[in-house]
Image (cartoon, rainbow, N blue to C red; front, side):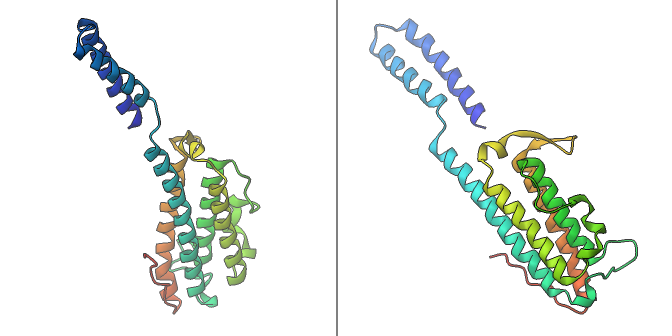
Length: 210
């Protein structure tokens, strides 16, 4: 969007130069010369509003992940201990595996974007790790995964997040877009877990929208 605006201003500058050359000694020509100088400077200056918006977007991204951590942890707390390994049907993940899947994806996506080393070992194998399939261990590892995401985003510049990348070797997008995909993904799987909690006799944590 910024580049498009700059191209439009450059086009205007070219047109003004043509007018100036035809009216170089007139008052109109002198006004056109002043306009050329102003537009040339403004065309390639990054507006403060754009810089502030980028910073605001990054701060909002981090705030959203802090919110996501609190909401997900509340879901785990809502699940009775007896339901941690519950499966609504044999063909789907258990509650614990859903939460471990969320954590694996959160860390995997953000590590790909930020290049910050994960703080959890064997991220890809989390779903199969039986040691995490009790309420205490599950709570700890999921919280650790969110803490990693938040710390990695806080340590990553807006310029880095704006860079184009190839996610998982096949999807072209910016780093910020990849982080957003992870955010959508964890919302999807956490939402599925509401049914698990009710089947286990619990009540899902209320939505913390505001």
